[in-house]
Amino acid sequence: MTHTNLLAVPPVVVAGPARDLAPMPWPYAVAAVELTVVVPFQNAGRRLREAVQRVADALHSQQVSFEVIAVAARPGDGSAQTLADLPQTRVVTSAHIQDKGAAMHFGFAMARGSWICFADMDGDTEVDAYELIEHFHMAREKA
Image 1 (cartoon, one colour):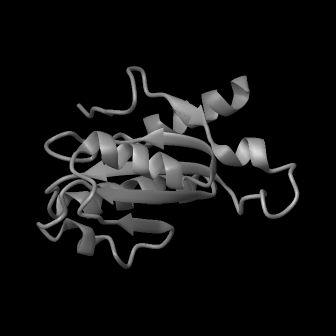
Image 2 (cartoon, helix red, strand yellow; image 1 turned 90 degrees about the vertical axis):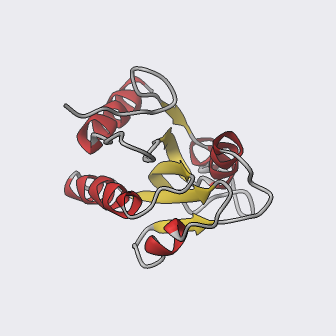
């Protein structure tokens, strides 16, 4: 059995800044992607890379343009370095981000996607990438 921990149950995908800024001229327009996946993490270890790669592979297979913003809460265990070479992934570390809530807010502030979701990939929880994509498609259809 797999579980998905997102902003709420069932998973929630919310409108991102690019939806509002797309019709506006430069400097307001944002180079957007369809979906931003915000991944706050803390001492996630090697499993973090595998989980992010699974989500990225699923999004590629569905031809969804995306970015992953992985934000370290209290960086220090080396988890951030495991993500450094993944395409479409920005890794953020800062001594000022002290918990997962702050990491999530920071990631949402950096998002360029028309839609944003939050995925908790720490610990023993396994993220079902296709469930995440299903909720993305449902949010997009209802908009």
